[in-house]
Length: 412
Image 1 (spheres, rainbow, N blue to C red):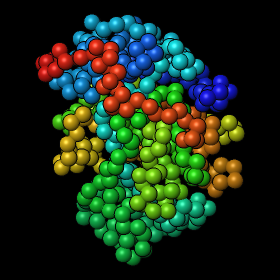
Image 2 (tube, rainbow, N blue to C red):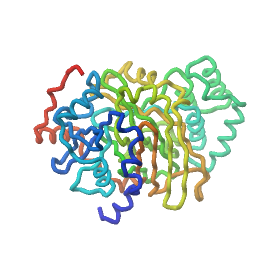
Image 3 (tube, helix red, strand yellow):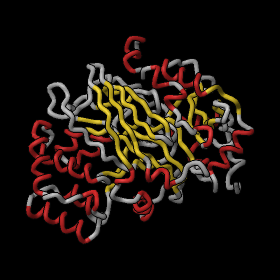
Image 4 (cartoon, one colour):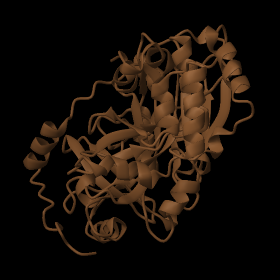
């Protein structure tokens, strides 16, 4: 890839400082992540020290998945840091990441072997927009008229106040399906007893802060989805959180709900970062469930959008979604869960009647407790290929002599 081509993929330097990336209270929290080390040709697990340096703890925990199996992951990470290798300052590694330096350590997504799952239609606004997409059949020009019709037919009903599966929610669901002819599949997961949980990407396929994020070249109507991403142990215990961009192709999914896999899982279409904040005294599940998630999009065409999502308005409790996941399935390497978003942009852009991405858009997702995740949108054809899967990781760790078994089952 030419240097000129790479330049188009780079996140502006102002987004890659410590101040822009980390939350204001980062020194109080327990943060872990992954860094690509060219000297060992593979990733290392790191913790963020109070001195602003990243410490390689791969000798203690060969994968993030393994660390999250500890009884107290935050305490285990702090103990491992004491015997870890001082790798470099967060500031320097962010700079290397922005420049795309092949000879310097660079930041990666802070997850590895976990299954990457996502919950859909967990917010009322999201439900309305999924209904709009289905009626549009992929044609964005029809969206304003259909959106107005839905709002008129609801006669002031506040979907956000409905508890999915409740008698009132089921009544409205049946009315919209039987009387108005709206798609039952979206209404079922939005208002019914069971929520939608789908596979967003393969383990280790997520990209991190500062990396390009991918858009399918056949999509002409798409948007970012700013979300809280929960980290889960193999037992379904929620142990931490990060930010995520569940890139969405509205036109492709709108043509058929069966195309969900096509519109959600492509090269670089899943971004997670900047680091994973583990639960401790400074950050709890209660914080994750009540946080506001901001969004800023800036295009090369001068377009700019500020919006966001609030976890306070989620219709399904995250614990109930996790319970649904683990009720009849197993995740031996743990999982991460995108909790869903209420962000469904309708702001016109150029010739489009609503919002859609342009290549080169800089997308920043931010929260006070998790920091900022920034990516530049590119075609999936232009995004760097994902090369290191599970087999390659295991081979790399073996070549490096990494065992990381001494902490297995240790009480912390």
